[in-house]
Length: 355
Image 1 (cartoon, rainbow, N blue to C red):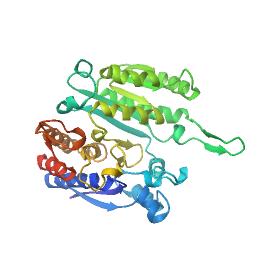
Image 2: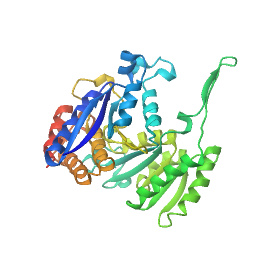
Image 3: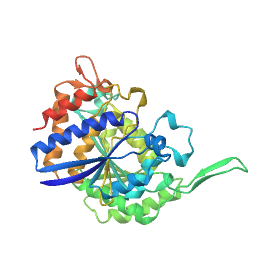
Image 4: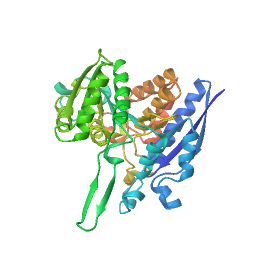
């Protein structure tokens, strides 16, 4: 039997709630395939701060490096908001991405037809569906640049930094993805102001020559944010730097009905990390209220990208679709006439649809 070693980092808030449902799905996949998943649990984020005094213990990072893939729930919460920047739970995310060399973050924003009414846009704008892939650079930019404070003049600074290699490798990921979609790429930057964005454009123009069949255009980030609301169907693959991708993907999530619907995959190293893009929502932690679908769809991405199990990945996605078609909804996507269920129930329902 083919064994896959997976590190599980439940994290904070609703992290343990949603991760538990993803494990149910993987156990069901074991029943219909010749793969055995072996899980090892480690801490990161706020729970690691409380237990070890650091958001990313060295043993967690080392275990992730040896694993075939990593599942992450969510990190952070108000409890740790007043800590110094290098001690906040979110530092665990940056440490995992940098430590594992995960430079490419794939964030598909898909509006399921069953959730059309949950989208805040008018029917004439959204149509029957929406499918955008946001490809976000993950290990450079302002989140990793030099930063600090100057006590003398009471100032602070964060540096936006990119080199050509970092830009080129993420562009190649985005262009390759576009070949299996609609062959249309939009690179989002702020080249009218930022020198780093002007470098992005130069590298893009060079890389694009290797993909003559792909239509490539540019948008300033402020215009892109507006266009995502005004005419989202114009987009297919969006490629952008770290901070812009962070913001735009959260905006795009609301077009899908709920941020609880968006999965993500962080790729680039020998293994990869899979997590929903939403936060830890500590106000509903442990109450059986969280939407586990983003995490379950992240598992589908893991099956596809880390394990080459395309058939099984599609089975998970079809199971999610079947659950929505049958009218099952968690509170964040609930509407009149649907069947309200909790986190655990939704996980059970989706797992049962996997055949």
